[in-house]
Structures are given as structure tokens and as C-alpha cells.
Length: 301
Image 1 (cartoon, helix red, strand yellow):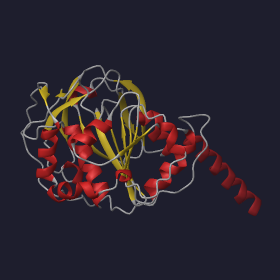
Image 2 (cartoon, rainbow, N blue to C red):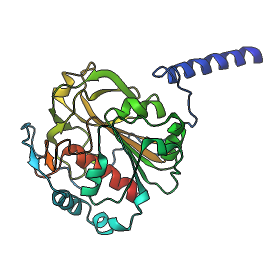
Image 3 (cartoon, rainbow, N blue to C red):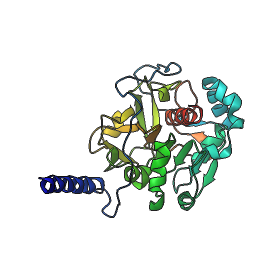
Image 4 (cartoon, helix red, strand yellow):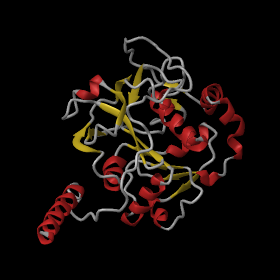
């Protein structure tokens, strides 16, 4: 009897290992079970109202957005944080440089202290004392850092990844939540519709806006809908998505921490201070507002 039970156990373990490594045949499953401390059935109340700008999408016009515009938004929406932003150690936010995105520029514009590192440094850097980790597109971090990132979030850290970092990092570190479905965007700026107005990440954001995408942005497939919460979608992107969902941003809890991923970039995606997709009334892009809310939450929770 014990041999039979042990044989069933091994068979189940083999199937789990194959499923976890399906996206990367050379991937070694990392350790640590999911322990959700958030009741997914109860919506998180936003700290401030979402700005309802109606249901009609108006394609945005590129606009100059110097740091003062970002300062105005964050000082208005997070006044306590803005007043004390300088007290956070630069190592509280670690930005891992990428080939395509440049989160550092937006972090500077938001007056958020941070430290930028090259991706190779991540495997030797201690994440003790770090509260937020930002991994830029394309996000191909060293394999040796996978477990470190997973442990970081499990212990309460916040992880933000952008665009190709879904394939380059996120789906390898957290298999079974979401992955690239092999689709690529073609439209430079798409409509964005906020579908989760209760999440704290939507505070002081708008209900509908534009969303800048670079060439061949990676479309998203959610594989664990019971844990993953989709924040924003696009009707236009859905036409280019093999799954016809057009997901722009999602989040999920892991241990005591949280993960957020968004298609497109945190940077302005334009030369100088131009912003291709300023959102109505808030001045900065919707994608930047959602990501900034996530980072502030990670720093102040």
C-alpha cells in the first residue's frame, strides 16, 4: 500500500514539475508555496476616488510633461508621501536597468529616491531593506536571482515588471499566474479602460485614457484567474491579442508582498519630456499613475 501511495506521489510530483517548466525546458522549479494574506473576495477600497471621465475614448495628443507635472500629481494624490519622500533611503527602491524601458526617468520625475543597477548585479545584491523592485523591459535577469526575487516578494516586497519582462522574468519566477501568449501589439497608442475601480492602485486615476505601447509589446494570458486581478484592458489591443482579452495591467498577492505587471513601459516612451498618452485631468499617463500608486503603496504599507 505504501509503495502504491508513494508511486502516486511521485507521479503527481512529476506532472507538477513538467507543468512548472513548460515555458522553459531548462527551468528548475524554485521553492516556496503561495500563501495569500489578501482575501480575494473582498475588494480593496481605494484611498481616493477614481476620476470618472465618461465612457468615450478620445485619442490623446502628445504633450510636454516636465517633472513639475509629475510633482503636481503626486503631491496632490499622495501628500503625506510627497512631504516625506526624501526620507526614504535610495535603496528602498531598486530599479533593474533594461534594454527598452527606463523607469529611472519617471521615478526621478516623481521625486522617488531609488538606486539603479545593471541586471547582472541582481544575483549578488542583498534585497534586505528593499521595499520595491522595478524590473524594466526586457527583464532578462540572471537565473541565479529567480529565487531571491521570489523570496523578496514572499517576505513583503513589491515587484513591478514591464512589457517583455513578463517573458524575460515574471513567468519564470512565478510560474502559473500569467504568461506571454505569443501575441504582439501593432498599434502605437491604444484605448485603456479601468475595469477594477476598487483596487488601491486605481486611486486618483481615470476611468478611460490612452496607453502607449512600443513596437511588438507582449500580450498577456492569465493562467490563474482566481489569484490574478486584471486592472485595465483595451478594446483596440484585444483585436491584436490571440486571446482577444487586451489586458494592459494586472496584479496578484504572493506571501506578504504583491506583484504588478503592465504591458508597455513606465517611461515616457518619447524623446525629451514629451508624453504620447497623457490622461485626461491628471496630466501624466494612466499607466504611470497605476505604477506610481503601486510603488507608493510598497513604500508606505
